[in-house]
Image (cartoon, rainbow, N blue to C red; front, top):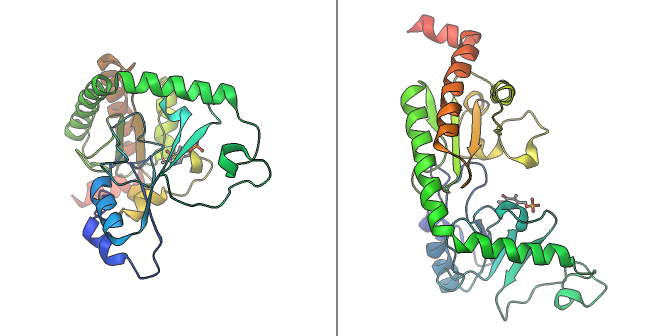
Length: 270
Ligand SMILES: *Cc1c(COP(=O)(O)O)cnc(C)c1O
């Protein structure tokens, strides 16, 4: 894996042992947006006769995924990440792949997950998928343009800032930055006061003040991982909103740095 979180297929191949039965790789990372080389990984899995699962929760409905071309045996996705209802997900299982039951009891879901079907959830997920697939290409183009505008301006106009994740192999709606010398939490609060919703990591760990494990795993030092910010956009986001966000970010980052003893030390040493 490189410093952008991108898996090197050859490194993956070298990690396979005689007792390896499963390769499971996120299709795209939910924090830094990096899109993994699924096709290359799938080809290795197929060649070695190992099952390949992808957690596509963040990518599904946002980027094209083809289970045949990419040799994916199992894929999981969740409705609420593409505008559907909360509480419903799906798992694609290639015909012939045998897995144990997840919940025993009834014969639902081909005996793999006992319990009454969540029909409104299923219907809602189906509709959300239909809508997401209908305009995926257009939406992705629009979001990518806005995302690149955001990234270009932030990197050019706010010094000591780093983009986390791959610059181009990246989800259309994701931007993740680290601002040196400041705390992500303070950034979030000040952005929120300006009506801007952002996140400093993933929702799964939002209750914790520890730096993101994803940013640590790609090699960021603690103090830089602490100053991280994730901004996500959608087809409804406008250029005006992005420009407003950038202006506010510039003000807030300057203000926080002016209060930061780390920044003061840094400036003195310059
Ligand atoms: C959100 C997310 C999950 C969890 O899905 P829920 O339906 O919210 O439980 C798992 N993996 C990734 C990559 C995600 O983005």
